[in-house]
Image 1: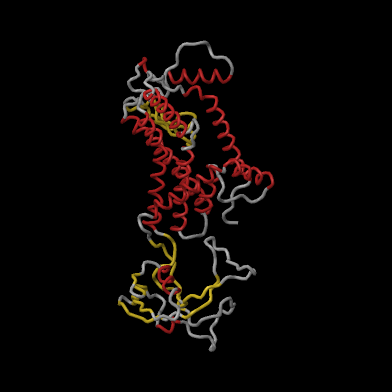
Image 2: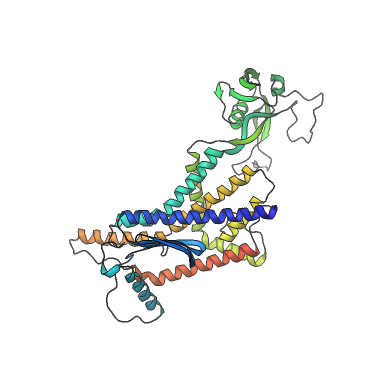
Length: 437
């Protein structure tokens, strides 16, 4: 059974990746067609063709390796002009790119070519793919947080302490000398549902905790629902010293190295843990946080890859927040699917992983280097700046930017990307990220 669940997790991520790639390419395809560009192919995957069918001018299909996709637009670059035969490796690559580009311009008809579009339309076409991934991530995170909810303390009471135990004590049972807990004195019972505290409606246990901690010695009217009826209880939190922690959960220490404490109100209530739906703004906010985190990872990618290489050769533990290959993501998905955890928790983790994957596709494709989408945006912007300058200087419009001249740089970037993928693949096979020890 565990093996089947592991395979199920792998398949979930493979299907999710294929859907993410398909939507990315649709993000390019739809605006291209709306702007009148001829699109010869819409393909998911690379390598040998598995299936395809032509509808109108476009061939739609799947290829054997579902690790990417592409659309073939007519005239991505201006047609080449006659000149001397190419010599040398890079010149040959440039000429080959020009020849392949020329073949997309049907019978010299340039009415439906990409490079003739206004700059803003070219940018929309190229950004359409990454923004489809961003939109999908926002939808996934919104379903997670606003549909399923965030796992936290609910308004339903799970436990009521009978007494107040000293802070830091290992004592687990109450003694006759221990003072009664305020919640027990007030008449709270497990199964009660908090309706309001001090007149404030309660949506989760954290809200109640904040009011209680801010009110030591202050009587609070608490409305609970018990057996279908509402009751009003009077809760007077006692003052208690509690150790403080920072945002990362680490203990706060003073200048002498002693634990910093704070006097807060204490009641003795424990919440039932469950999934609490969050506001509709929570999904976009989580997506924005992920964008920031992935952008930071991309900026520091050389150092992160160096760490991956070191861990691969030394066998040291890898950073779980570092870069992963598709194999690494699939491996984690399989392990999560096979864990002994509630189905909802596993589904939440897998969907969260899929959302993060789409954020990574969004950020990575915005890198301003060819052959990535961000590189094509830079080419379009440069073309627009040249035309704007010529117009300002009252000069004739310049020839369109011939991006095939950047093929050598594109090849170098592609080789680096392949090298990065190979390193991560080997690392994920022989020294994978361990989430469960």
